[in-house]
Image 1 (cartoon, rainbow, N blue to C red):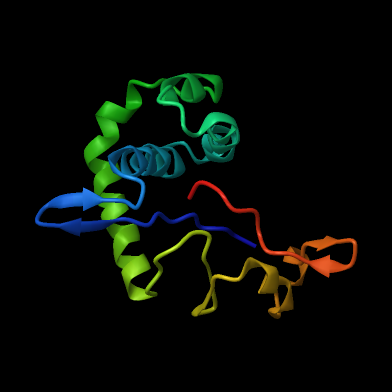
Image 2: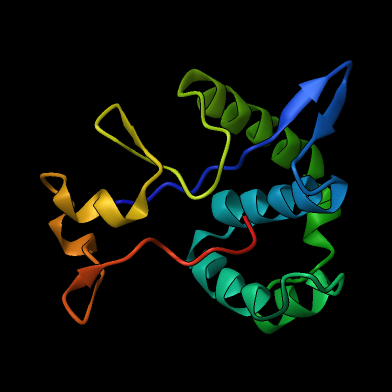
Length: 139
């Protein structure tokens, strides 16, 4: 199973917007740069960054994941273009919230029901016999 992480943002009058403001879409661009240019470090960066996602010290997370923070300036325009591609995908599927899973053209927002979909049975989260929704939090 290959997981493609996409980002939710929009553009109006040439300005990019995210639900949680500019810090969110700027972090999206950094993650896209890592996803596309340094895919072997992507999940490690997410793991480290999510420990303190509200921190503005993203560069420390990048360094800890083995990424030189200076690469983001070099690839920023590339990252913005890729974010616009993600924006087109989220618009196509009418995605407005996170987490959302798109599986074989089907949009799923109820994470508790993922395990009921053929091919995604391994995603069933079972806690004491009851299926529960995914944890809530940062996008």
